[in-house]
Image 1 (cartoon, rainbow, N blue to C red):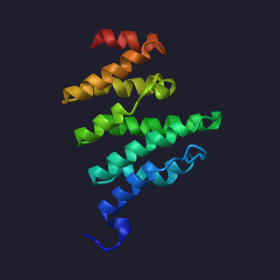
Image 2: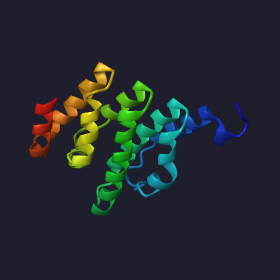
Image 3: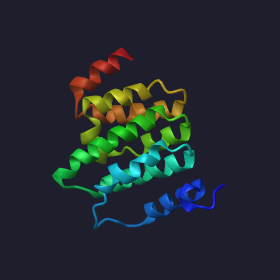
Image 4: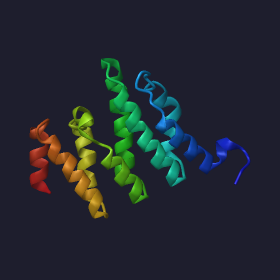
Amino acid sequence: MSDKPETDPQMIAFALRTIGSFNFSRHSLLEMVPDSVLNYLNDDNPEIRKEEAVNCTKVMLISTDTASKVIVGEILEKLLVVGIADPDSNIRKTVLASLDTRFDYHLAQPENLRSLFIALNDEVFEIRELAITVIGRLTTRNPAYVMPSLRKT
């Protein structure tokens, strides 16, 4: 372990957990996420990746203006990649569990639905269950894309 806090995984995870506990409801932090925070989703340490996934969903929910919808869509795409490809099943489960109805507009987009359909093949049953729950919820938003794909699986 290093003495420098920026390279200490436990310190980074603690910092991310602390940031996640703050109430930023009056401040839009969305602009800082793509440039400075998303790189933690690719960290070698699973605890850091998990904390970052939780923080990203919290920050995305705060922003409601139209300009931020593009950024939310980009962040959500990166989170979905983590949700289907992370080697740690707890992180995949955390990401999929955090995708509540407030993200449905973005999740119903075809590229995000494709990622969710990939999650149906996960080795962990709970993750497959979370994926089918989200996909089922999205049938009302994009039935033309969801229904044919569900029939194939």
